[in-house]
Structures are given as structure tokens and as C-alpha cells.
Length: 397
Image (tube, rainbow, N blue to C red; front, side, top):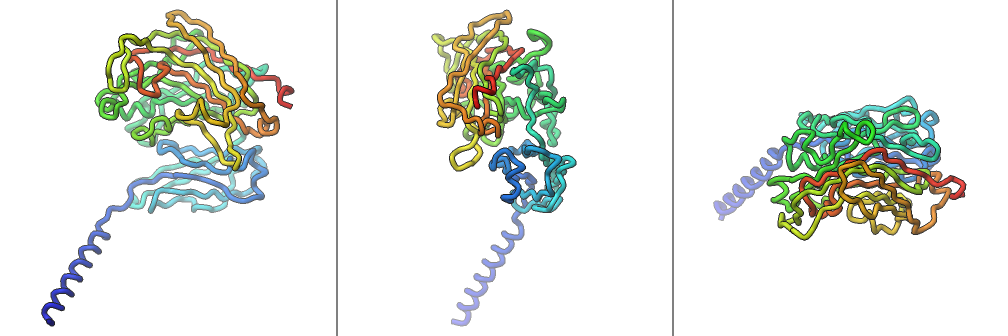
């Protein structure tokens, strides 16, 4: 009996040792990301246009510049910014420590639990940045572009990104986005000119944007995403959903304090030769077509929470105020003008508009059904000289 008890004790101690060893050998987290950032305090809300501007949620893994929008940077008090970071990671300056953002950005460094990796984040509180408006018009000539920059050097200088100049002449990176950041997952060795969204020197005047539907190779066949349409849109691309729900990768829309009336510009288009479905099967009776449309919507819900539209609700969300779309875009090798007028569904609230309570999504795509991975490889849409005309402000009073 004593011997049996000793055996049981030995087995128990052995099991405990094995479990302890497993816990000790568990590798430490190598990630070093900021997942969310926010400021707290009712006394601070007067510095922001909306309560929702005090929080930046769901920070994409490839973003390292976090910008809060405030009414006046110069009038900011000391602010405590709080962060949600990857488990086990540390952040310097300390999480929630008071910092002076009135004189410019503050750099935070996040270090992984294992201490081997770190990422630097620039956190700023800035006045609203938007392209210059002249005579109630906002113009985009697509002359400002470069190859992407990423702290992970393997993904730097791989594809084109576009930026604008704000009214004060400063650079604004928060206007245009593309799906190029997802295409790199399908074809990591592709050259910049082989991506779906590319800068082209031969525009209507100067440079333009060239959007081409591309083959995604073996990656696309595996995930039943055989094509990637070239696209360009107001908003942000979030690659974390590229393997799951690709419609969520597109965060469409940027805040506006003016109501759009119409959008004009110039285009060229040539469809690809072979139209296929998501299984890669050819449909000889179908011809690819491009898409140009825009949506104006309220960017916060009844609870005051920030709202961004995605590919799955960009045309159906109940907060949509007005929409515009170019009905037909015939194939042409010559530059042709296009125009679309917003059709209102609900009236705009002047006070909410003044406080940037509305966002506009402007979308260009080389394949109209590209979000369903249906279209023709080689379909190419050129875009240049885009103008947004706004309604007179007295109409919203």
C-alpha cells in the first residue's frame, strides 16, 4: 500500500514537472504592435470635433503613424494617450503618461515580449488635413506618388502609393488607398509596375493612375481569389482581413465638412480578353466593365460611435446620405470625360457637417465585379484630372 502511494506521488510529481516544463518552454511573443489608441476625459471633448475622434481603433499592422484630429493643435493641454498593445509587449514613453503634443508628434517605441523586435510609432494631434479647395472645388491630378515605405524592409519600395497636399501646403497621406498592400501577399516578388494600381506618366495632363486587373497566381487559386482588380479609393486598406473576409480590407471614406454635388474627370478603358469567375472558369458571353462611384454618409451612429463603410456595405448602409455613379464607361483608347451627380437619400445636418460628421468614399476599379473576384485579367482603367464640386454652404444652413 505504501509502495502504491509512493508510485502515485511519483507520477503526480512527474506530471507536475512536465507541465511546469511546458509552461517554461513556451516561447515569448515576438509581436510589437499597437492595436488601439485613445485619450480619456470629458474635459477634453471640446478639443475634438466628435467624441469618436478621441479613439483610433483597429490599427492595421502595417500602419505606424497614428493621427488624432483636433480643432486646434496649439491649444492642446498635456494629454495622456492610452494604448492596447500585443500581449507581453512594452511601450516607451509609458502607457498613459502625460505628453505635450501641442508642439508636434511624439514617438512611441513598442518592444516585443522576447525583446528581439521593436516598432516606432509616431502619434500626433493635428488639425484636419484635406486637399486644398478652390472655388468650391477639390482637384486631384495624381502628380504626388512614390513607392511605399515600411519598417519591414522586405515590404518597402514594392508598390505605388499616392499622397496629396493640404490647404496649408503640408503633405497628406490620408486620402488615397489601394489594394496593393494585399496583392503583395499573392505575389511578393512582383515588380512595382506589375501591381494592380500603378502611377503612369502618360496622363491627360502629366501623370495619371493606371488600374489593371491582375492574375493572383497559385495563391489566388488556393483561396478562390484568382484576380485582383486595380482600385483607388478614399480611405484605408487593412491587410489583416486578406485571408478571411477581403471585403473588410477596404475602409472607405474620409471625413468632410462640405457636401459634394458632383464628381468629374477623365478616363480611358480597355477590357481584358477573357472573363472568368471566382473558380477561374471562362464566361465567353460576358465582357468586363470598370466602375466609378461615390458615397456620402454619416460617419457615426446613434450611439456616437465612429463608422467606416467597407466593401460589404458601401452601397447599402443605412447611414448613407447620397450616392453618385457613372452609369456607362464605354471602352476607349482616347481620354474621355466622365461626370456623376450625387442623388440625395436623406438631408444633411448642417451642424454635423460643420463638425466633420460625414465622410465621402470615392472609388475607382478596373473590374466592376472585382470585389467578387470576377472579371478579366488585363482590364485597364486610366484616371486623371478628377474634380469634386461642393454644394454652396448656404444650402446646408
